Length: 236
Ligand SMILES: Nc1ncnc2c1ncn2[C@@H]1O[C@H](COP(=O)(O)OP(=O)(O)OP(=O)(O)O)[C@@H](O)[C@H]1O
Image (cartoon, rainbow, N blue to C red):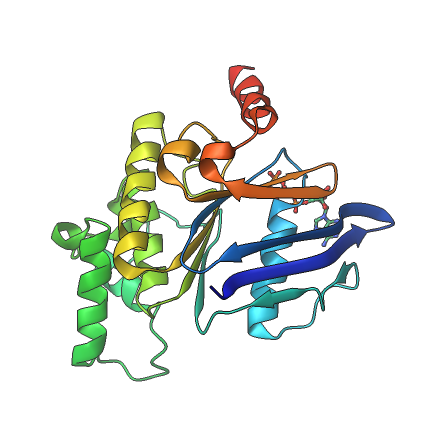
């Protein structure tokens, strides 16, 4: 099987401080992979480097990047934070449509409508499509962000802590939702998470960043140290 992501000997350092130190790992096609590691371990730095590889963008000087290869025609990214004011005017449907690349053309064609309907359906928002996004709950907003990322049929979906603002019940519901659509669409998912409680049950693989190193493997083999660390943090 061709790997979807291959990282060989990748280093990221900022102001002389090495964050990722010659790391190597690979992720096979169509896997649900969770990236774990304590604050500052380099999770966001790594996904930024992966995104930049796909976009062909220039990297910050701190990153040495020949080392990254990504087999992806279309990558979608759901960032951790969004600043949506309570007066944000768009409906959920219109917000999801923004994910389409249709230039200045104001109308939606049949294919685009179908893509929006499928995405809304897969995140359980079909019934709320005409509601304003600003009036949606935290969990509904997250699902709208994911639907917006899905409309262009990505083969790789990257999510940066999508459950950070959700309670335990809604977090698990979102995990299950994304797991289901990942299986339906047969796409790769890279999910940054501080909560490790669900990984063995719902993910295929883990990638653990610690002390500048990367360890990866099957989700069921997630090392205890990676789990314990996060439980300590949650209990504080
Ligand atoms: N552009 C940059 N310039 C300087 N330092 C940076 C830059 N980007 C990241 N860093 C530093 O690199 C380290 C890793 O940051 P990164 O955001 O990748 O960690 P993380 O694992 O995503 O953390 P968190 O869980 O807190 O989001 C941090 O110490 C951060 O301050």
